[in-house]
Image (cartoon, rainbow, N blue to C red; front, side):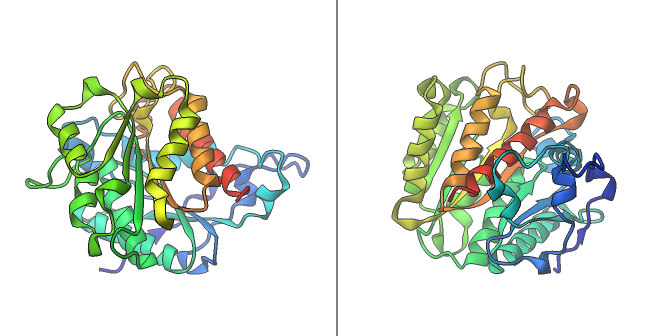
Length: 323
């Protein structure tokens, strides 16, 4: 099928109408995927949450892409002139109306592949965490990644390695990545689960990840050494020059700071720690894909979780400018 993308609404692109205080809404243009050039950062949304409800979760994440944009485009470019030199475009949202969940996945994968094949770096705004699999499948296709050529880091409270035997859902992305990507692009040793909370995960799935050769770095292990452990995760995933994808599930952050998560938890990373993770991911030349999943605006308080996601995107791009 041929994917379709709808431009983000102009009203999301904030402006103070002050040349001394320009905001990202004035600096990041709406543009088509076909306008992607080498090293362009391309923001693309996928307003879809049926995978969450299929996993017995709470709906609402379909509204996240535009709510994240609303917060992102109020931010300034910060203090680095390099941010202004980085080409960034907003390609809008993948059209999901009238499509099955499987068709949405295919459309997303094709859109990401089109971005990557043109040399772009996609930032995918979800949506349910089932959307990570088609996103990285698009990366594999667009970059023509071969066997063991992909590294993958999942920053999450949950392992998300459930079988898709009875259909895809928000808990199946990383099972699919390890078992179904073309050309066996992802091998277990290049997969890192980061920030996992033991009390919310079955020992069966933990043992399955370990049995695949994957790495599980728990929240308890990380303690106050987030940067040290995330640098280790980047090293494990990117070893041998692998192109690396990073997926941020907002429920990795504790609910006091991310109340609008589809599956919020009282324990988790702190908001500044998520910013540090995103910054380090952006700074790594091996990272070629980022997504942010499971923000749920109907469950949010004063848009704090969408603002947290926006801050993480800013931090990622800030890091990218230092490559």
